[in-house]
Amino acid sequence: MKKLSILLSLAAAALFAQEAGIDHRGEVAALAFRPLSAAAAGKWGVPAEPAPVVVEPVLFTSHFQFGANYTHARITPYGFNNYNGNLGGVQALYEFKTADRIYGGMSLRWREGKETGEIGSMDLRDIDVQERIGYTFGKADALVSLYTGFGFRYLRQALEPKASAPATFMYEEFYVPVGFLYDYRYSRNFSVGLYGVWMPQVYPTLTIEPIGGARWILVKTLKNGRVEMPFTFGLDRFSNTTFVFKPFAEYWQDGKTVAKAVNGTALGVPRNTYLFVGIDVNICYSF
Image (cartoon, rainbow, N blue to C red; front, side, top):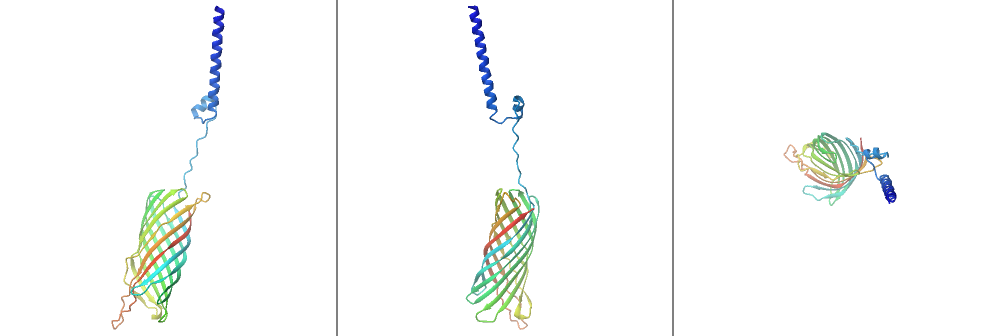
């Protein structure tokens, strides 16, 4: 009986050891199928899984855009019928823009086309140059830039009236832009913005070609502005190159002439009102 008890005890101990070995092997097998911390790796002698590498987006400070534009224009001389037509051209823009830094920019836009109306036709050329200085607030994903600067606009109207001789009017208008730029980066490869600028004139003049090239001072106008909504698309392969689609609307005025002849007769060139609606399509290179 005593021998039988000893044999049963030995059998129970062997069975317990076997079960413990199975559990131990099962734990090792389970560990082989899940990532290990550094401490667990040291305990079991298994290499630790490397930590994931976080890639931060590259932040650029300088941006150069160039591209083409399309504009539908409606021009209304005060007291006369509208001229309507389409303009096409090119533009370029350089900006230094990053969070909590000075903002600077310079832009050039050229466009021209033919407008028609009930009283005749008009070939219009529009050249605009603008320099900007300001400050950018915010973070990398949401930036707000406030700026002012100096601008110059050249508008050339070559009129061909049906009932009178052709004439060419050349407007040279200096103005002070006061604007804001809001940019929001929705994802790595897409951002949207809202831009607005007020452009009060400070020194507008007019030259009329048939009148010996004399330059006439115009009444300054303040109701000049432009609104843009840029949509920017990027590519993973080219992180510093993006495509910008920028719908816009613009309202501009030329002041009337105030000059008079010796006998007191006014020159009589009326105020013009321009409404421009269109889109800029640009390629942007950032560095």
